Length: 288
Image (cartoon, rainbow, N blue to C red; front, side, top):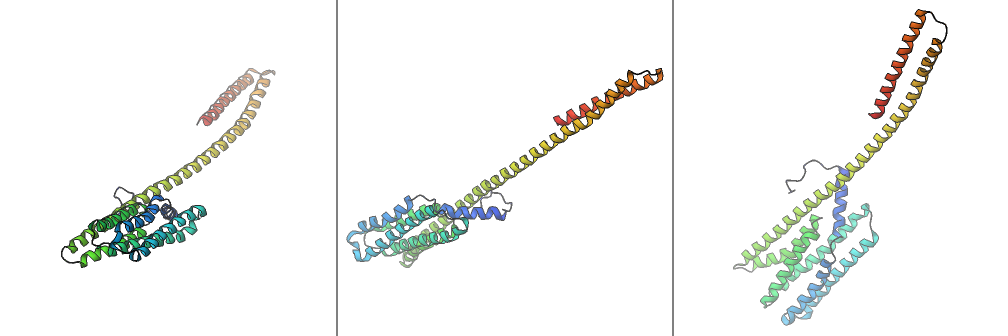
């Protein structure tokens, strides 16, 4: 289940597709340390088993497990060199899941055939290795839940069945192993949910920034258009008003009767008042 603090608002198809793409890319960003460990542990386990098993019994497993680890390393290197497009990622994801599943199956085999070899320490070592690998995989495979579920089933289920079939207290050990597997799957699911939410926030924020940038550009364009309009109107309105005031001043200098002079004075005063009002309106428009 998703974390309750996460947003319940629906995700747009575009963002959902980007999140899915990023989840696949995370598989290939996992540290190479895990693959190195997968290639080293089989050799160490084979050495520890010593004479308990012949190299004929354990040699093929060691070779296959190490070979799969090497091939998975080559896969990661190839991915980084190819830098695949989003449309190609499904194929890369499938190949990665196959590789991790093969590793899990080989360790599941080890959990059954190398567990009861008459050496308590060796049996404990096998269990610790499988437990450790599953714990590490819960982080590296969490971005694609199906890959980790397959990993847990293939690596833990065989030992769980073996414990159950041994009788006596085996059912209890089997139950503990099963509970541990459920815990790992649940923990990986929470990590996957957190990753999804994180990338959702990142991608939604990118879209919001782009929208704000677009709105800003539109506002700046509108402001420039407003400035051009005001500059034009300022010229177009003031020019005829100045002509009217100029003609009234010329008219004042001509012989006029007292009544005509009074009319010209009123007209001139009104023209100056109107010009001041126009100037105030235009100046206020520029400020706002």
